[in-house]
Amino acid sequence: MSGAIVRTAQTGDRSAIHALVERAFGQALEADLVDRLAADGDVVLELVAEKDGGLAGHVLFSRLIIEGDGVSCAAVALAPLGVDPDSQRTGIGAALVEEAHRRLEAAGEKLSVVLGDPAYYSRFGYRRGPAEGFSSDYQCDALQALAWGVAPTAGRLVYAHAFAVL
Image (cartoon, rainbow, N blue to C red; front, top):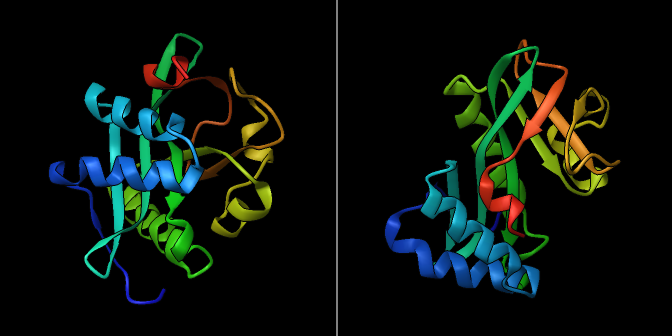
């Protein structure tokens, strides 16, 4: 990763994060999602990659609840991961996801779910198989899961409210 520093996002980063995510996706939808997740208090972990005095990348993991058999269990959802177009293909996205995974596992999280390109996210250990046992509003071939240790394998995935208003 060329010269970027990965760190925890701070309150003062909000407007720069919004601008970065909007540039990365070419629209405001994902940036608005990040704003809503932060405002609603649903962020479990949010990291940025800082390069040359500005933000070059961002990743957010929000709280996800797995409901099943009258019991609920906490997990996380990776969404979104964005890298400034001028910094793509430099390893910034990978550095963000790998550092986030280290922190999440160390914090005791057991399961992460992502809705994204299987060819990209498989490099981080996400697989379709572990996600097939879950029901979700987003159930499709792009829904993948990654477990750290013993994790739930079935139930209904309940995303943070901000996803419902997309």
